[in-house]
Length: 395
Image (cartoon, rainbow, N blue to C red; front, side, top):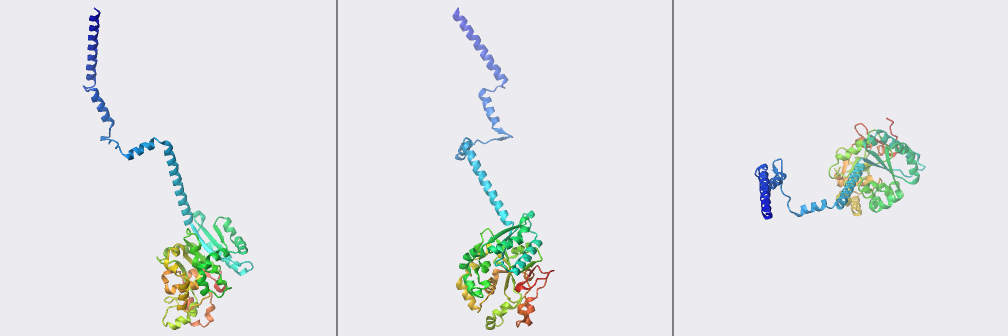
């Protein structure tokens, strides 16, 4: 009896299970469980009608997985990347700052008891600043470099103070003694040939600074304008800096021609031996030599020019001086003049109006008939140069 009941119970359980399975088939659209699972996988792998590719089992993928599972390393690398980005931004900011600085250099030494020099510097500086459009509100600033002894430094600070305190100027002083120590080995050959004497004004190494400026100033100073103190600006100094853009590929220095027959006189022997030479002749077809009252120095090009640097050699200087029978007394401008007779491609000639020299000392020294050919300068004056203590017009 008990056995029959157990058999009957098993029978009915089996019937119920079969009914449930059949119902599941009906509800599932007659798909098996395996079919449904496969369908689900297929749907998960399909997006917008495209089948997603399986991840390849590569080392690159393993590396990605490793990073995802290593948040500590991930955070460290993020910090390193952030630091690197910050360094790049700081470098860009530094470069931007350097590009916005307009560098000007002047010699202002031995001014302690020299009222004339003080007045000249004051006129030059104030006229330059008054005409300048270089202003901090444009993201630019004029950076004035003064080569000054302690007494002259104190005087200069009093003259430039107003502009400095307004934040319209950046000021740096350079010790002439230290500069001389650096310059002397570089410019000694020029001193021997282009100085009036061991104790003369231009006999000091410092007054050949323009010749070796590219070896003294830091490499991030790309351009600099060097000015005499006896100048008066009538135009914006920005226009002078714009002239760097007009340099030819080999030009390293911008300089105006001498406006007196100075080198017609000093090269008399060479001219006598070489009839028809242009050396010492007036413009526009001659080579009158240069005046260094206004100098544009492309320091980058001076550093890069193998030709220019080879000409700083003492043997070269002596050979050229002997070839032209030349012994000068005007420092750097004598050297640049001599170079121009052999290597004119090193120089960009500035318009005469940007260094309008007022001195007429040579007019009554036997050169009356040719003087005006040298001294004439057509056009609106941009910078007056009161050389040889010539008064500068008020206009």
